[in-house]
Amino acid sequence: MRQLTALDAQFLHAESATTAAHVAGLAILDPACSSPGAVTRERLVGLLRERLHLAPALRLRLATVPFGLDRPYWTEVPDLDVAGHIHEVTLAGPGDDAQLAEKVARLHERHLDRTRPLWEMHLIHGLTGGRVALYAKVHHCAIDGVSGAELLAALLDLTPEPRSVERPESEPRTTAPGLAGMLAGAVARTVLQPARTLYSLGRMATELDTMPLTSALPGARQVAAATRMIAGRAPEPSEPPMLTAPRTPFNGPIGAERRFSYGSIPLADVKRVARSAGASVNDVVMTLCASALRAWLRERDALPDRPLIAAVPVAVRTASARDVVGNQISVMVTPIPTDLACPRERLRVMAGTMLTAKRRFAGAPAAWLGELSSMLPSAVTTLATSAVFRLASIVLPPINLIVSNVPGPQLPLYLCGARVLAYHPMSVLTDVSGGVNITCFSYDGSLDFGILSCADRVADVWRLMGHLREAMDELLEQVEPSGPSGRLDPVARPLPVREMVSA
Image (cartoon, rainbow, N blue to C red; front, side, top):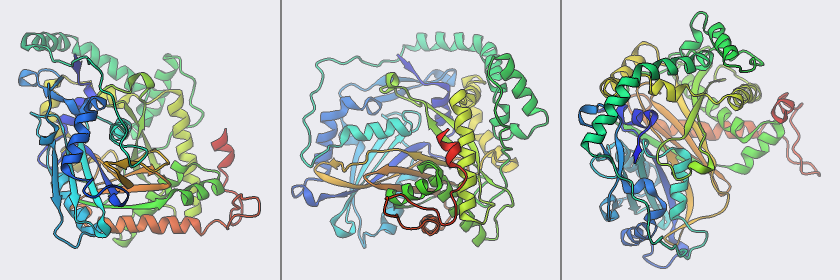
């Protein structure tokens, strides 16, 4: 028996007419190395049938508790026919990136049917150069970024020739309790809810100075420090920054229509800048996003005079939880230096800010996201979540956007014999998290970006992708070519973050 966690259920409750809470990916395939006609819906259906046992999230559907009195359960669909979840379409032309992105945006707007397993795949033909695309989406209540990458890996091969996968003779079945069991569990959790709420409040008190909005409340730092001391945690080496999100054009209630853009940046260039600055790859990624957002806002005379606030998802999934359906994530909320004009200074400040956040997270991973999700009874969160999210976006948005960087394999992979050229991830937009989401996935020497936006907030999402590339060129101009030793030399002096990062 598997019941959704409070955090998993939160992704269900966040859905509304304007919010679809699934994550997705767009794989660009080159079938040149495969046999003719290898990348078809029939071949993909056959592959899924052979390897469905490797992807437990695809075999489950929701079993809801009457009247939303408790969180739903997962139940396995016996003898699931995957063919009903796999679709095929051919673009009419010209088959370029803009047309593909438009098609994918329309697919991403559509809600998944909750009476079935919560996933779909769409094979898209008609791209320029003979390429094929695969758009796949799974509800966020079933997977996070890491488990989504692992799910994808179950379908991929290291060579054009698909590997042989043996199916186990018997597998444990996931079933939901009957009606009586569901209601009994709901009653028990309702009775215990006041104690659960007090426990969550106690846990959240230690994180008041790292949570958006609450960090700016009078006395928040003092209360957090006192509760950490009572809990026996060591004092923080430095005060966390204020986390008050400024107003931007992409914050506020969102609409239902989406825009999508995508593109890739050479990972070698990112690593080159990181080595030169004594920073990490993720520091450079965050700086690129800050630079792109700064440029986009400046073009519209809407650049705030203080940093934007970004939520950065962090995987906390352990090896023992690899096959657990649902989310094993936490989040770091951090300023990003969109207010700084100098690209070198942006990288220096971003690296220092991320280092402070990582050190604090390593000492005590932020648990407030899960605790916040479990504070109220399920019946209340089912009805109120989407309305609260919309109200918060109007009154005071807690963050400006979500930026996510998912590490992937650095070798070529194949699907149905076709080489995967790139994999561009897509995530969720909500009223409370803002009208733009930037996600990237490192694969085979590239950083593959996917930028999703609300059409009412950011209509020209391709401009953001262009600004990302311009930001990369800007940072590359700050370093000189490699010397005889193969080490990169900064233009003037090392950015003073190397000692901090290596500590």
